[in-house]
Length: 254
Image (cartoon, rainbow, N blue to C red; front, side, top):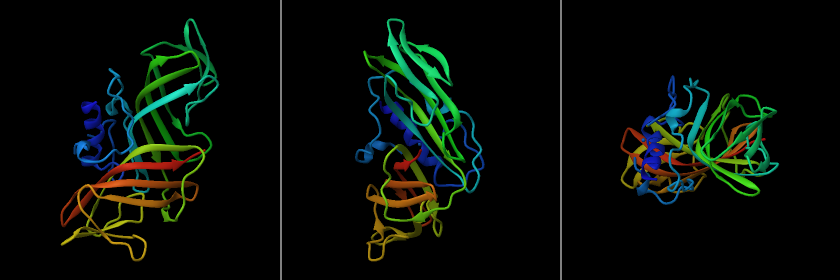
């Protein structure tokens, strides 16, 4: 568990979601999450030989795009589709779990893979990568775990008091900003280090603008016009020149 969470935590150093990096390899590397309260990451401590972030394909990220990545765990009932994919669990038989993958029959047993590398169905400019392994085949469902990554292009961030509803995806978010810059994917800016902590701009009028390491930070709005999003973050590090945050993003997708 600690090794897997450390891999997730390494996202912060590379600031995948918060910086305009020219390219992002499959395994962005990360501060230990033990210092933060529960961020809502799945408990995968009893599952071995899971895919890791470096199993995801190489990705180039434009300045007006953002990437979220981290661990994933899914329960898939008979007749259900893995969200964002063309993978449907059609039946469970004595021979194993029978899926339809891209319309073709695929039987999966314990330890077998469920992978996806395409656009999220029903929406333009959103790529989704999934690397799961089946770890439990029940009488009416399958459980699988691993890692996933969401890549959203054509950002047009707008703050608004909304809550993502319906089909939502929860995925780790890590971000960083230099003094005078915005945390990518939000309208929150970093002012610098003050006597009372890291100072942020872009908060609702009248809100206390300072946070110390471990303090919570929230933001709600639109990643672009068709994607509502909510961030629940914690400050991981700051000094007078930069700040780093880690948390969970909840996105509403088709």
